[in-house]
Length: 365
Picture 1 (cartoon, rainbow, N blue to C red):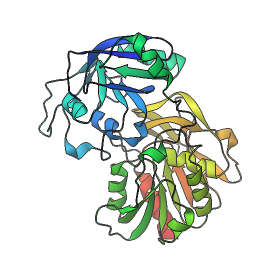
Picture 2: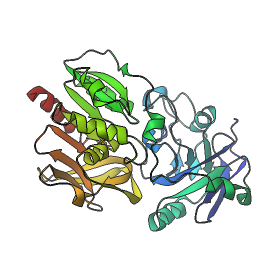
Picture 3: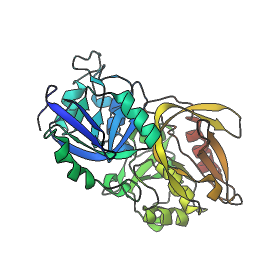
Picture 4: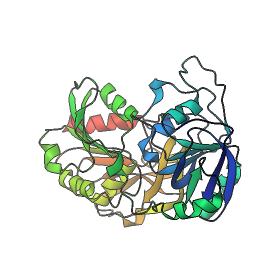
């Protein structure tokens, strides 16, 4: 694919709305669920976060690409988004760490983008009508030609995307040395999670999403980490069954999709949010301390708090925007999880203490 910032581009939504702008990135086509994220910075981390797999990501901040890209800020081995939507793509970035402009980075990785559209209108539409599928093209911008292709884009609900982004084989992260032996399930794990585990003296072995419990226990871990990831947690049934086999036998810490999978393993239910939580400034109340944490979030599904058995687990955190469940802790076994991203790359670090709590569980064991 080639890059062009003057080539016409079109975004067609499932409700029939057409946005016409200019290409930003590769020339091509892509379909997926259209969502938005409110972060003013961190676009490179967003692009490489596997939790965004299968989505056309809209940036609500108008100027994207101001500081270019660099190899130190990636969160996985490749760009994960299906497509990219911005108001203004900056073509003359400036930063001492920059190695490449954002548009060139998108083009080199074959990612289709569109700029020059009213992203405020698009965001308001998603908020009022809910997240919906879309089809983006800088190859054939005629909306009449995109309708049939849009119809072939699968719905996010019921989609096991974790299986598409997980590692094929187990591997050791970093030096492989540390006091605590941790097995991390890769449902779409961000590299900064692995960096933080290593910084807490953990030797981390990363395993595929569908690894059975007995294979994990054979590694003799001090703790098991359940990672973030994309899509609907309910279809990731082998992982849910694996967690059921691990509960009570080893300490467990989960975030994002891992939080949802832990809840499902405990017998709770999950549901699709209207437009999801994606951004760097979501207020979450820690119910045990009364403190409000500003959190980084990226998810389209949530745990149904009413379906959680109170004799099995307690709610520990609540979202102050919509009162959704943001954290839980098991009452009889060493396991806990949060919906937000305590590794916060990018974002605030109010939830960093959770890694210390995980270490405490392993230390106690």
